[in-house]
Structures are given as C-alpha cells and as structure tokens.
Length: 159
Image (tube, rainbow, N blue to C red; front, side, top):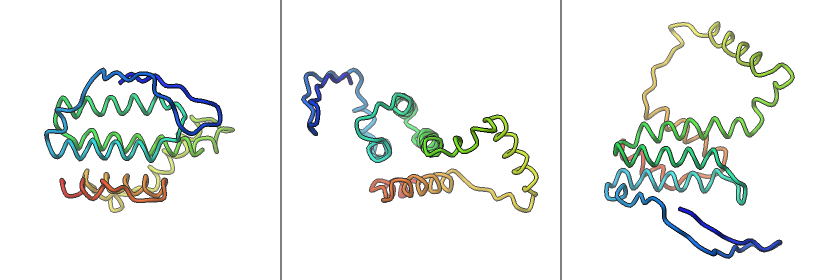
C-alpha cells in the first residue's frame, strides 16, 4: 500500500491525501488458518510498534512473512520466525546489548557462548517443539506490552 498523508503540528489526527493498494493479501484470508495468522500479525504490529515512529526493518519483516504465508499457505514457520525476530528486536531496543557496549558485541557473544556451553549438560537439555517455542515467545511479547493478545487463543486452537 502506498499512503500519502499530512500531519499538522500538535494535532492527533492525520489527513490522508491518497491511498493506493499495491499488493493484496485478500486471497490468503480465504483460508481460516491464514486469516487468523494475518489477524495476529496485525495485532502484534499494532501493539509492538510505537506510534508515529518509522520502523522500516519491522515493516520489511512483515512484508516477508506475509509473502511467505501467501506463497506457501503454511503459517507456522512464518509466524515462528516473526515471533523470534520480534522478541529479539524488542530486547535489542530495550538495551540488552547496550549494557555491554563498553566490552563490545564480540566480547558479549564470546562470554555468553562460553557460559552457556559450560552450563549445559545432556541431562539439562530439554526438547521443545514449535508450539512450545511459539507460546514462550508469545508470553514474552505479552509481558512487553503488558496485555494479552486477543488473537493468541485463536492461534492456539490451530496447533
């Protein structure tokens, strides 16, 4: 979609000048599972993204995930990737990596990798499936926005 709008200073409402649909994902909504996935992506983007701030990287992620769902009609790989990326992106923005900026990213990566490798034993490794991972990531996003997604229970019924 291509949208042109005007924003007046100190005004909450925008004036839309023109709106052009470039590519439609209407056919994806004919399948119930895909429709629920698209509703979830819409809600997640609405809740996770700050108002009136450009988020080009997140927008490109959404386009990629939408295209993958449209082409394959398989929602779980695309949604899992979206959730992983969204949680990692939120953590990076929250300053997780900034805390160690004096040591540098390479120092943080090496430190975390060696601590993790030393702390794991075969008895402590737990097998999780995609559904468990998606639920964990969903809880992480919900904790960040401090509310529950309304579409998450609908997704859980699809698993």
